[in-house]
Amino acid sequence: MKISNEDLYFFNQGRLHDAYRLFGAHLQKDEDGQVIGTRFTVYAPHASEVNVVGEFNDYQGWVHQLHKIDEAGVWSLLVGGAMEWHSYKYEIKTLDGRTLYKSDPYAYFSAERPDTVSKVYDLEGYEWQDEAYMLKRGKDNPYESQMSIYELHFGTWMRKPNGEVHKYNEMVDHLIPYLLEHGFTHVEFMPLVEHPFDQSWGYQGTGYYSATSRFGVPKDLMYLIDRLHQADIKVIMDWVPGHICKDAHGLYMFDGEPLYEYSEEWKRENVVWGTANLDLGKGEVQSFLISNALFWMKYFHVDGFRIDAVSNILYFLGDSSKGLNEGAVDFLQKLSTAVFAHFDQALLIAEDSTAHPKVTHPIEFGGVGFNYKWNMGWMNDTLKYFELDPIYRKYHHDNITFGLTYAFTENYVLPLSHDEVVHGKHSLVNKMPGDYWQKFANFRLLMGLFFTHPGKTLLFMGGEFAQMHEWKDYTELDWDLLKYPMHDSARRFVHDMNFVVKHHKALYELDHHPDGFRWVDAHNQEFSVFSFLRYAKDREHFVLVLLNMTPIVHKTFRVGVPKKGVYKEIINSDKAVYGGSNLYNGNDMNSEDIPMHGFKQSIEVVLSPLGMTIIECGD
Image (tube, rainbow, N blue to C red):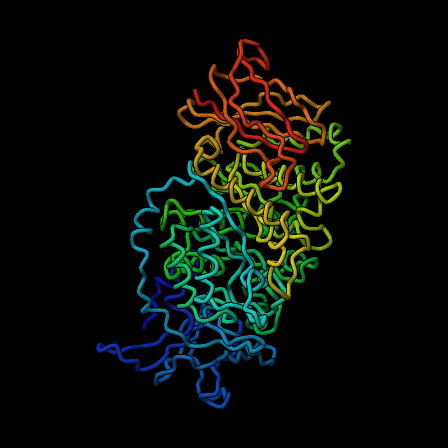
């Protein structure tokens, strides 16, 4: 292999989008496909010497010294022999006389924790079976399709009876049937890159190109994604391009000086998280990260990325008073261009709590280049509202209505994510006020708003069956709760809501367009009742949603409707099968020539206590 001057130029400019082709450990094969050696290449411009060490040379660095092949700081060496599965590290001599032992930033595989060495691994050779899916996905329009995302932490979703974690390939028979049964269309894996600490989300990674070995080898992960695709389930990877773990073997101060991170301490040190911020304006870092995103799409067929902590990327230390990070915005725009050039229906989702404009707008229209953004404002306002005793909700009516003033300014995902069920915040059902029955009624009411509000949906694992405890980092979800009727009924309601959305295009086709939503009555503050319409693209298909946010029963509640006809209830959260009091609209409701809410027609409905109902016109 020869690294050309053109490769190095593009690498330094942030425009080398397959940097993994040059850097890392690559098996070298002859014309017959036989391995003849391994090429090790690393970027370390501040090093005085770089060696590769492992059991193959008794960790004696002088045996295999890399050669500096250009003034930009690229070091490389071909080591003879078949070395797949061999462990190695780079021994880096710094300019000030220190010796560092670093994992390979471009390693395809790593040893299982607590070991921190990289491993030589051949990514080639997996035979994908998802061709039909890959052809179909390019024709899907994500904006006008249902998107129900199940956010999953791999190590704590489900474990073996002995407490051990499932491997990637072992998860196939558990996860795929569960997702299909419950109607989730996407699974979002929290970071699966190599990271040092089991009791974490995985956000502080050390191996961006290395699928964590705690769950198996990379081709096992390929198999899992392959099978998910064959089941028509899309895969989103949680991805962290903004900040890095400071463990000694990782990217931090890789060659003894700031390399991937900022040189200026105030920009670099993320004290709250204990991490270091990457210098996203630096060309070599841009090449490293953009190549990484495309690597996951090429080799693992992922459908998109949820980008962590975008506020910390857009603004220095996430603080808008410190100014917009122009270099980071440039990186995000280059990332967007590269990702959508590879696959124009990819998902690029920002976890962003800022008010920065046009985050999900195309670059050519002045946007940052994402196509989705988590609606953190909706999440915060909604959960604050639901945590209130219903008697006080009328004083906070705008917590629900305010979100519709900006709901169509970006393409939003509504997140009820992992962040909301940790650190003493309580689980979703335990945020709810009232006694046991009321907690579950409020939970179903929250789920009803969640699935009918404009925007796509993301639910963290365990939320679907109203797990009582917060997320636990040392064990699986509390699956035993499904033995209890209220939890199984909560699960059934989430299941049914997913399928109600699936079969009613009014609940997803215009999630991002104001034509898809109309308030019927946003001002019933006194009784804390909300009513709105959701429309399909054809404007002929619509559903009426009513939410009664108090335990007061309204047996004859009149509501305006846009069309004369016979109305039928699709679903009611108060049905007995969901754990409710079984007060619902079982009979057809004929519209009457009684004007209401700006419509010429109206119907009379029953509003159950702390209940949500969806009604459609059957003509």
